Length: 146
Image 1 (tube, rainbow, N blue to C red):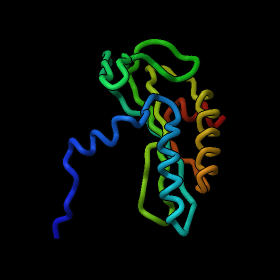
Image 2 (tube, rainbow, N blue to C red):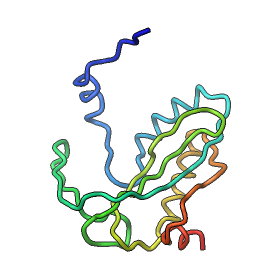
Image 3 (cartoon, helix red, strand yellow):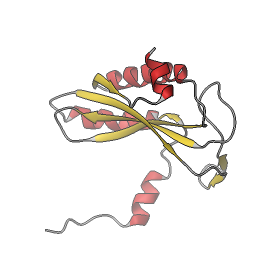
Image 4 (cartoon, helix red, strand yellow):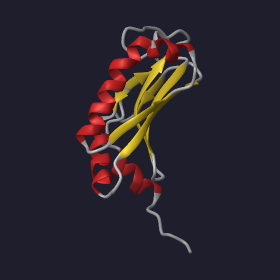
């Protein structure tokens, strides 16, 4: 069975006005509100993970803004990692990136706490209950848990 999908340009036009700046993605939570309205179970998991990226500067054509520097609060320099925060269903199969930041080689995990609190509050405001937070044992994550 083949499902007809929209043309790639149609998808690009629909997404070009969604603001995806580093930080908590407020517009994504508005879309999650629609998803949560149709779910019977509202429990979800927040997970965060970091991955290496190639350092460099890129121009975002939609906003005319340059990206390549660290966006994590109280940190400066050129970004070498991307930190992603995702919500995922516990009993249903879905996941969604809800925040991200560019980070450097050395990160103070204590700054994660206010970001996590704002994500949990935003999730609650759209009807989702974060019942678990999952991280790996990287040194910034260990600092956050202390």
